[in-house]
Image 1 (cartoon, rainbow, N blue to C red):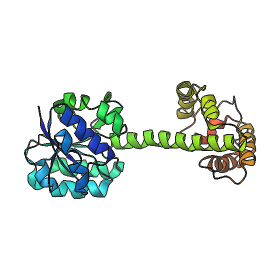
Image 2 (image 1 turned 60 degrees about the vertical axis):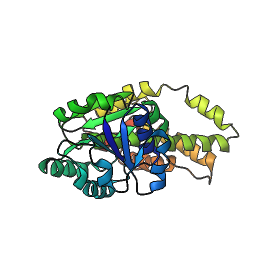
Image 3 (image 1 turned 135 degrees about the vertical axis):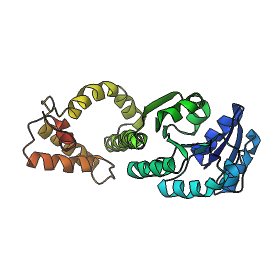
Image 4 (image 1 turned 90 degrees about the horizontal axis):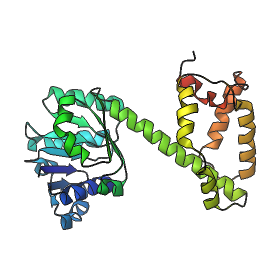
Length: 284
């Protein structure tokens, strides 16, 4: 099996390192807080005192770090230990523009770098579930495709453009975080109405969100806002929701109401409520 390294062993990085060790890889890891690395010793993960020590002799280096600044800092510290053949696999969620700049600089310097953010939590990483996106040189991806496939339930190579995976990761996380915010407001509305939260979630579960995205969402992306639920009527419903919840903290609906008001003032009250996305698309 391979000799690999993990730089960053927070919740996700430690889960990846644990799973790799259990698959039989020789795993060395570094983290700023070394107690998180030492906790992996029971799985056979070796602790390294510096990033350069961790990556020395590794065929692949997996980075699971906080942000762009930390990625730059840690790779700079690791470079003295990198061999010419080492492939850097960056799972960090980062800014697309900075990711593209970093990839360009690294490739010009001879470093082999792929950006591979994931949609998965720690348990999914241990179980090789969830999804992984990959952007970067296709030939480089081909060299590690089988290794990455063992880490995830769904591996998707989306192209050579270096910022593609970073941008798609943010798009996906926007959907996830937005959904959590709406669910928080659903629970607040249920509380204000004397309805059990579990019952409210069961009601929400009756909706086919996948079909909604495929139909209404696709029409939004095409700039088609033929009314089936007029914006003015949707705004009335949001008013009722906010009046019901009173002074309770809300995560999403107040901002939605404010945006609806802007669009109604601009003359869009009679079109579909999905016109919320009008400024993101070109209308036919």
